[in-house]
Image 1: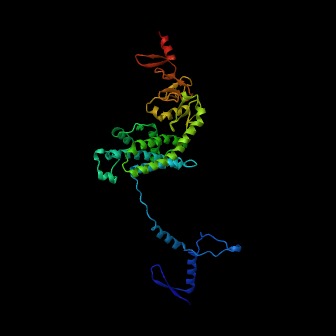
Image 2 (image 1 turned 90 degrees about the vertical axis):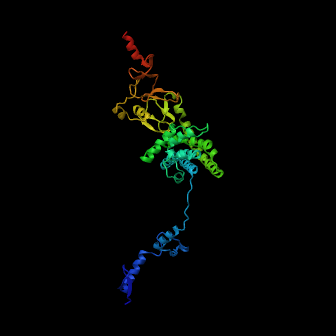
Image 3 (image 1 turned 45 degrees about the vertical axis):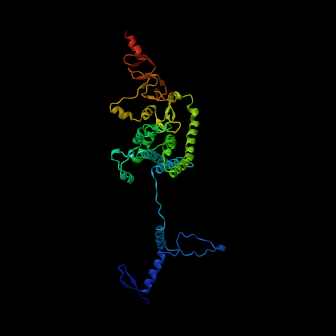
Length: 395
């Protein structure tokens, strides 16, 4: 009998019969086949299968992959402030202009990266002027900590304020911390970062385009002229050329969409208000369901849309002691809001979100929107025809 010694788990030897050893060897071969089950099969001429060439066992292949990973050369990254801001900006534009249209995940990261681009580029310009301005508390500025990134920086809104106060910005650039497109982008970014959110493709395109245009002008007139390193300036110019190419696709989409809905809005400018979601004057108050014709955002009924327009809840406002909207003298719904219209974007108009009727104003006595018949000069109050007739009848 062919007996041999096999080591046990503790490394000591125990006797094992030849038949047991043969069974163990056969089991080992079954567990570790000589040929990988994923190896491609090749057919020999005449329909005969070629014997498959032996390949390393899975166990040895795994070891090879692990050993090979150490041979991959690690790549470092270097993103100073301007390059970092441009990289965020380029990423946002590439995601928005993706061929075939961006996916939902693309839209999310486009918003996050565009907001990051704006904040980083504003701070990059502050640093060019005076590094301490990037700090939240400028009095605590320390150069060593600044280079190490051991400080709390100001936010985008504060950065804009400091740029306006301390930096001689070009006349072509208008930076307003309360710019509605910057504010809308910041709000969407906050929702996505801290909780979650939803928006339409068209709304994201329309809201991001003005910010993209603002940042490109800011780079051209306020940043690049102040870059001292010629190589850095040249690299930034190349990045901007790439961004401009993709930006044209976004611009073309917005222009085409507005052209498509032009006929639907034509002749209704006095009852067309800006969409709270995309910012375009494309919400037609015609007595039907309130929907944005540009980005397809739905606002529900007229009463619901009026409250959505100002971004508040009717239930919460009235519960906390606030006032309902003024009522409409035509349909009776409390849905008359002071709004800007496409016909008069710089003045306040009174339009009923339910029936779409425009009104001259709101009576200060009955709180009903309609035609005003009289103004009490001493008190500066407006009076509708019904209230004026009622008071006149008393005399």
